[in-house]
Amino acid sequence: MKAALATSLAALLVGSASGHTIFQKMYVNGVDQGHKVGIRVASTNNPVMEVTKSDIACNVPSYAAPQSTAVINVPAGASITTEWHHGISAGPDSNDGDDPIASSHKGPVITYLAKVDNAATANPANLKWFKIQEEGLYDVAGQKWAVDKVISNKAGKYTFTMPKCVPSGQYLMRHEIIALHGGASYPGSQFYMGCAQINVTGGGSASPATVSFPGAYKGSDPGITYPLYWPTPSSYTIPGPAVLKC
Image 1 (cartoon, helix red, strand yellow):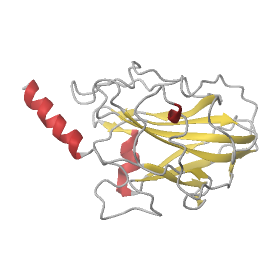
Image 2 (cartoon, rainbow, N blue to C red; image 1 turned 120 degrees about the vertical axis):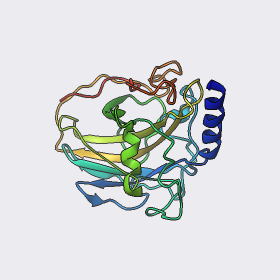
Image 3 (spheres, rainbow, N blue to C red; image 1 turned 180 degrees about the horizontal axis):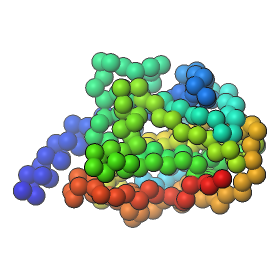
Image 4 (tube, rainbow, N blue to C red; image 1 turned 180 degrees about the vertical axis):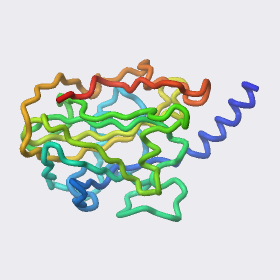
């Protein structure tokens, strides 16, 4: 039985090998900021595989040209919706079965901020990041993960709130999906991330603890080396620090 399971899982992994994704659009309080505007859009949909590489911060730095120099204004407390797609596309592709991401790519959605002087030009190396959002296995009975919300209706969208206590100023916003389908051993889980260039307005006075990328994750973290298929997941520990509490 275990051999049959291993064979079927191997086939699934091969079949979904191209089911990757790219963060490429953002909405603030429901207002579309424009395709590739204010986001360092990855030039390919290939995942980052190793948490010790510098690419784990904002993806491979050969971003899709032209790289946007826009900085998106985000009021503290605003609703943020991000949009992901399998390819660099202005909207959903009904002819692509893996758009926005393959349904096998279960895992969490996580968001971090790093304070910078100029979000349009900031180098992601050596920045200090704090977590503002996370969601993992939210429905154990139904085996529903945060990424299932991205897949819902093929829209590629995920919505969360900018905490009201985040201080005003410019930030890189690191938005990430971790796909766990290959995560039984390390390296195996796939990391998809992109960094938006934002300016928080009307903010608060939080002084959160920070982490570095690379450094925040270890390959041995239980949320990274994770057997997605057997036994059936009953819990999940999201990697990284605690979420900012206002």
